[in-house]
Length: 421
Ligand code: EPZ
Image (cartoon, rainbow, N blue to C red; front, side, top):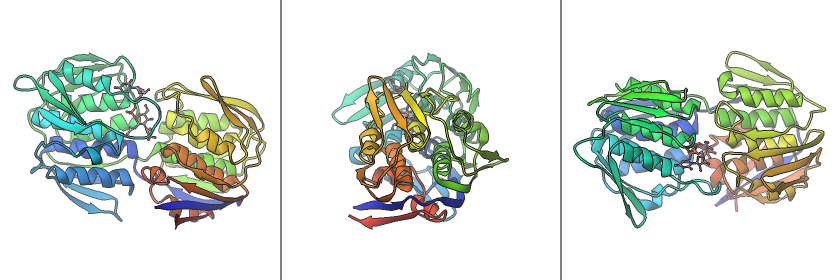
């Protein structure tokens, strides 16, 4: 077991390069099962969620060649068989539910352990089940796994209205529908960039997906699919995390390998605070920014302010002048970072449905624990800002989604180490 130790309070400068998107690659890897061929993924981030997914793929019989340094995965799924997946492995990450959609699409059945993931409050999968049922599958609840099987010879396309905007349910339905008979229409679909990324791979593998990125997606099922090459889009949440850090402590930090459109609502909030930036084709330079203004944040589905960025931006909010609040309409219980930040001297608390803060705050290093992925990222940023030493435990959460975070922060002047507990 290890912990992260940061000696904070120092300004930072230099360049941070953003890696491939975690929330895209965790769907792209299971999606390769549909190809029944060889698929090459480029720009794959070096994060533990990718390790877990590779292990599961190999248990199912896939052959995975990993070129870690180059960020390349060559995945051959011709020898994949649909067998019950190990609960222990499955429950480590929420995205394991994508195996349901991929296996159902290719084999007409799937037995996958119940998904896990960060504790953000209840994380049901009823919308996924409703979509699979509409396509002609039934679900048999086994003790720690869900068994899905198609009734009849194959899944049949239909129109599915999503009661809530759901990234996972939208992607999972696209996966299953890509091999169903006929046309599937997803109404009230989520519009996140990761959905477009998965649709791009599916189409390169021979599927016919139209409308990804809008709230109506049409999938015309195909009998066979084939191999492809695909480069993962940059991680907009990693980018937002480092933009917030640069705004708080930077004297000229360039964040490169970003897609501006994926960050528009986040950048608009930084500008509202008074953060000074130069926006270029695929990078943003954050200049030294002072006298920032406190702002309010409400998270909503894309293209609005992302729920995954409300925790990482909070340490920056604590350096502004004034009072503000944050309402997370996606996960109202996504507040586990608040008491940890308060232990570092932050004037922040949860009041009914919102997080309220008063700034500016002198943050002081302390021993804190990561409770989930983005809460952990917020504590890293707070540790860089705080005077003195911050020790963060439970860092496996952070390593799930931030590729080479120690190296990237060290390169811009942060005194940060990974040490044994
Ligand atoms: C994805 O989770 C992301 N994870 C999350 O990122 C992100 O916060 C979330 O989308 C944003 O919507 C991955 O892509 C692996 P949802 P997902 O289905 O798909 C409710 C991170 O930090 N819901 O869009 O699980 C749900 O409870 C992670 O990288 C149902 O009620 O989220 C939530 O309130 C955290 N029934 C809302 O919908 C369902 O069947 C949106 O969830 C599914 C979801």
